[in-house]
Amino acid sequence: VAPTEDQSGFLLVAGQRRVLACLALGWTAIPARILELRGASPEALRLAENVQRLDLSPLEEALAVRRWRQIEGLTQEQAAEKLGRGLSWLKKREALLRMPDDLINSVHANQVSPSVALELSRIDDDYQRNFCLEQAINYGATQNTASAWAASFAKGETSPGQTTSEEAADRYQRASETHTITCHACLRQVPIVSVRSAILCPEDFDALRGATSQIPKDA
Image 1 (cartoon, rainbow, N blue to C red):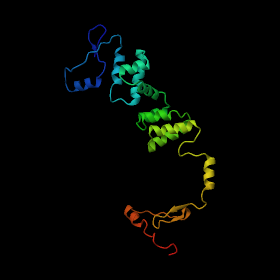
Image 2 (cartoon, helix red, strand yellow):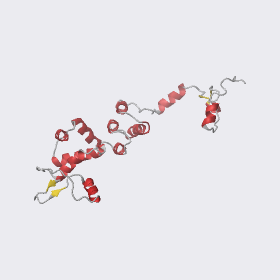
Image 3 (spheres, helix red, strand yellow):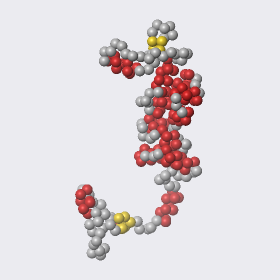
Image 4 (spheres, one colour):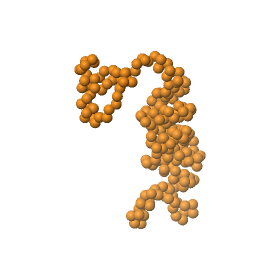
């Protein structure tokens, strides 16, 4: 809490949920820490307190830091020092707010980490970035992986798993005319156009795997 300007009472700076919980329990008194405003507004103190909370998401931290800096007129260096955080941490948090909406939403939903999202934000082509984001969400990606994707985009290369129509046509021409696949029963390569499907339970599938591998082809 902090004293009001006329010293007639106190303002609740932080801990509203804790106060409500105590009231629900019927408590009439709880310990409190009295803060000196010293020119700072109650809102600024509240924001500073919120930034230090452990249950904030990265985006909530970023919003609290930015709002706090705006009210107090602090530079990033000053804010980092007051928070006891590294300047790099603060810059990365505020950079989250400058990302495209798709990345912001993915970080908020905890689908990708802030570090991965920041790397993907370097890809300014919406289609390429969305493709990489889907890969990261569906299959996972480290910061190094996302950084490599962004570097490939900067060099004019296609994203992992993507090919141009010319590349696809060239690969098709260089491929064998007869496409084959492994038969689960005989373990031989057979033309893909000749395979047949069957519905098997796991036990029968395992029993049939390789069952006819020793039978001659012309048998």
